Amino acid sequence: MNESYIRHKYAIEELEPKDMSIKPVLFFGYDIVMSFVSALVAFIVSYQAYRAHTITRKKSFLALELGFIFTGIGLLADSILSYAAIASRTPHFFGVGYLAYFISTAIGYALILGSYIIDRVMMEEAVPAMIPIARYGSLPESILLILIGVVMIQSMINLLMDRSLNKLLIAAAFTSIFLSHLCFMIQALAFASLLVIGQILRFIGFMMFAVFIIRVVRAG
Amino acid sequence: MKPYRSRLKIVLDILTAISEESGKVSKILLHANLSYDRLMKYLNELLEKGLIEEEMGEYRLTEKGYRFLEELRRAEKLAEAFGFKF
Image (tube, rainbow over all chains, first blue to last red; front, side, top):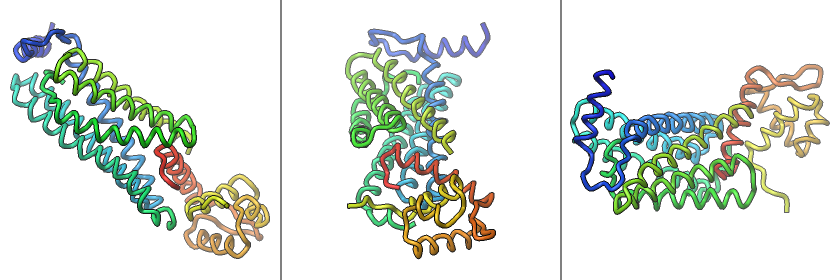
């Protein structure tokens, strides 16, 4: 057993909330990795949107690109600061990490939602060329839930209007992320074990984005 | 009523026609579904940008044109998946 593992384990025991009915200790550490990988996927989606924006000059792609950048930054900040909190045994980093995650993700989701608004409203555009995750709050999560909920509904409408595998992947990804925020919101109020399910759902959502991007790149 | 085709979509149709069909104007006209005058306007623009080249009355994609077509197809897939107009 190496030194970092022992430090990690003790940090968890110190930081774990006493009132947590189900202790997802086995999940500790994996959530950080999943957030990190999700952040990378978000950056890849953002890069594809950037390339699409470069070639088409459509503002909806620009909003999408920025939306995924902010979402990625939020996830990255959360994973890095959670790791820093464990490694340095400084619980304060958890709070900072979550605040960064919340602000950045809220901006990200708002921008993704904005990309749809730009695409629908600006018609002329188309013409020319984790560790103690119990610290997740129910209020910020409900804000994120509303934002991503609208995005999810929009993606489902798109799917219903014209079905394709890519649209299904996008709709399923946003649905998965929406459900993850629902889990985060509820776990802050009652069931702590839901945070594990929430993390897994969010990870699955970003994996769907990854599959979609692979399909897009291959299609080119 | 015919569905509206954006400028990007027209360019994509023209480049696809040149890449997949022969580069004869008659074939491109058929594939891109444009009037002769409009097609020539687009072809001249694509020639100026170095995306296509003309030889013996036939058009073909340049290296830059192939790369542009690839990026345009990816952008179309991305737009289609997110439900954006293209």
